[in-house]
Image (cartoon, rainbow, N blue to C red; front, side):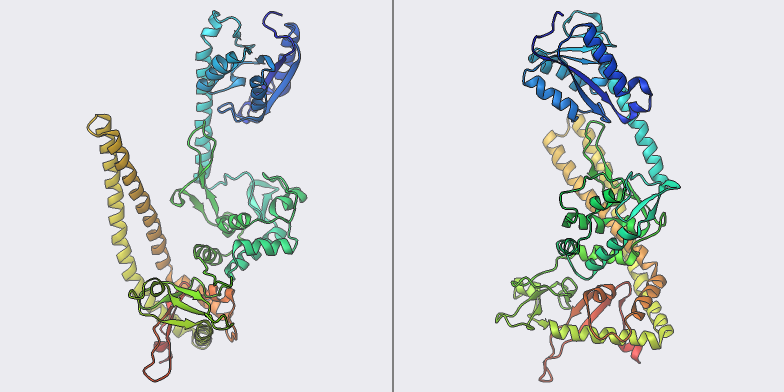
Length: 542
């Protein structure tokens, strides 16, 4: 056969995407294989070898079958490539033209698309002249299909239908409704344990180490061994928990019973990399399935994850780390060990004072003293609620109403200013875009201004989300009081503190400078309780 190169292989390339699969048997891999092999036999092409990509889009060339074929081409082992038609080869006109006209030509490879009557051995063929147009139409089809799929996904996501194919660890698909999740009791128990260890103050590495020690199956291994579909293969070590896996579980708001859509996005059909969407662009629908984790536990875990727990030189940390602040300057107080290395001498010192002696007066509090003061405060609060719940509720409602009204008023003013500035930035961006297009503004100046405006806009949008969330919390005062009372009732008669109790009840502890006027060192603390703020104990006791 003219054009066939002796000793080289004939590459028969087949491709089928998920979208193509819906169009029927005519595009199936087996159908393509039959056509290609028959064509190779009829035209006496030697050494036919199949390269197959089943389930891959033609919009990019990061496909295992194509890459394997390309390696053979670059090694000089391919004489000709045969495809059923140009759309099987690619749906990217620019890249298809580059490979056919440059890469394959450079290595002396003949390219044939059977149904399009395209053959590079005859460059003067009219069909070859139309190949570029056909490639463009193939690309247009991919773009149009992508637009339709995105529109359908967007509509589903905005209705609250989950877009995740595989439910997160702890859930399985409902056998009667594949769009609904039900709890997997065994995995859900592990999820609860992970959140409990986090609230106790353990970091992701410590949690992963504990799960490995207890021989708990990692999520991928658990799913595969229980016949549950998993996007990840089982690793060599089925108990190989990683800290990144723990972090991923702790971030999943879906465990609170919510569907969360649009967490990621891709730039275009050519770029398949999934990028993280800003939180303000997520669509969250509460109550779509049964919760594994309560909202307050989830939020507490997020708060703890945001805090950096300072360790001493000996590697020790405290259950109070991240919760203690200086009452004078508001800075965090750092956990430190005594210079003499003696046990039981750990203390918290103002970080601002540690950095600059002039910025804040030097004062510290020993951990043992702090623990006694906090425990006593919690005992008094929980005991008071037990005896005088209704009076406690009335006093806190009155206090939160005053504090909340003022805070909401301030937040609303700031929200209005931020939204006005965001609108102004959008107008400014359009103006500099037009000035740049008209030549009134240089590319360098445009780039600098656009980056500055974009950074400011992102910062303001994040602030708007935080303000709106803060206002929602303020408007749920009665619910916050009820939740706190329920939590406090569990700790009536408490005799010692642990990390879980501390993080469940306390949001922050402010330490006053010591008072030595009486000849003895006395210190006062102020505790900001989770969901309530400061509790006026003196007023309550009257």
